[in-house]
Image (cartoon, rainbow, N blue to C red; front, side, top):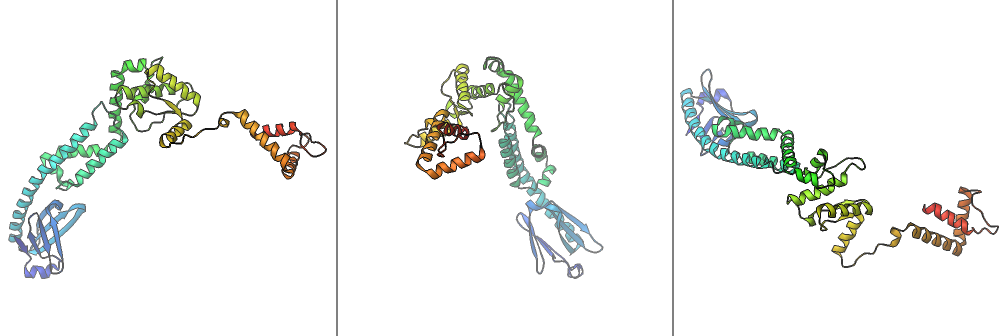
Length: 359
């Protein structure tokens, strides 16, 4: 079925479009030099208006775009509009059922993320948000029309509310999760360390974010939080011992963590390491050649002795080297270092300077 502008209407309107034709799931508006295909899934509304003489059809599209057809016989315009509206509304009803199913599936995903036995991380919330946005982009109806349909309205509004609420909903969910876990695992937090964990420590333990910065002063219980966190992951089955890595800056701190892990968790499968020990372990795992760390790394006295020996040897073997050092020491520390008449530095001078340079 099609609708054409009258000859006089076409001449008077001077409009690029003078004909509209109904297609399978859309319309084609055309003129002598222009053609516009409008699928039903892009239509927001179809308006039928009457001018002074002729009729007018107005196709409303997203982003307030409008395509108009002028100069048509009024009675023909009304008849065409009624027929087209019936087809479009029938198609819309069928598509609304499909859209309702897609929206319900998104609500199920949202509901699954709200289970109080799981921490909702920022990454997971962002992934769900992106999944919903992608699903909405694939709906067979313009989103601006979803509120028109009873089977879509509530689900659409819930999805919109979830998308608009970027952080407060996630924070409320995680607060409920934290409260539930602290109540359910009260004995765990009371017994995991020699004294019960306080509220802040327990909240840090149950926090499920991929990264968490804990700021606290010395002796405030940061190590207790680390040990409890390892025990929490094991108790909840969220990680196996080989998946847990504890790092410390120094060997003493790493040793203390090891002792507390064995005492509190009763396992030697979790090991605390220093950063250097971890690097060495990784190298050992990936290479047949086991690197050897020099004893000078940890023996300050040996380092000082080696430096002094090398320095004295250089001064003995190379006069220019000895002269350079003598001049520098005389200039920098005039009167503080004894020198022999021959210009050779005394042994005590060498040792003093070496100790000063090495620290």
